[in-house]
Image 1 (cartoon, rainbow, N blue to C red):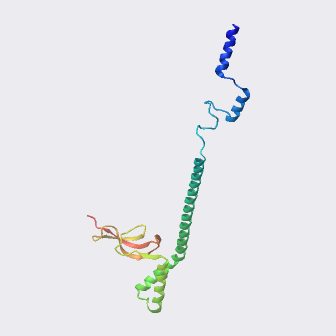
Image 2 (cartoon, rainbow, N blue to C red):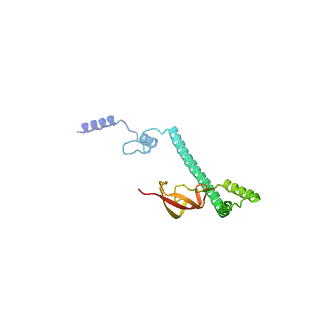
Image 3 (cartoon, rainbow, N blue to C red):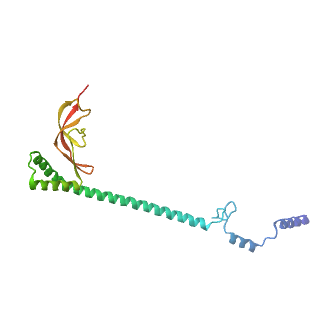
Length: 194
């Protein structure tokens, strides 16, 4: 039995080969720890490509720069819009009292009192106000718009109109750009029924 035991030991040694414990330890240090599948830990199975890593970093930085550029453009638009609104509000505040003067000028013109040197002053005032962006609106025959007109009274019906229409302008309306400074005060007529 001893011979069979010795021959089995020899067979195992031949099958496994001679294993040097120092060499096995050196192999473990060279490859590092392994995961459950026998691959070295931290290795996804493919060699790390430094070019791909650099490209990924470049893409991230490019996206960051694009995001910053978009934020800056939005900020710049907001500042421009705020600046325009500030300018418009300042013009609105400064020109609102002038509108009362223009009403007085209109009444003087209707009574024929705008002549001579006073006419030159009136013309200059109207040009200055127009250059500041103030426009006059409301004429007889305009369709009534509650955003632009303040109806003082209905004057009945009129067969010549298809919608509620301005018949008489009591006081003109004024706007700066699209902003209504003062709604026009008007008398309106409705279309005839039937």
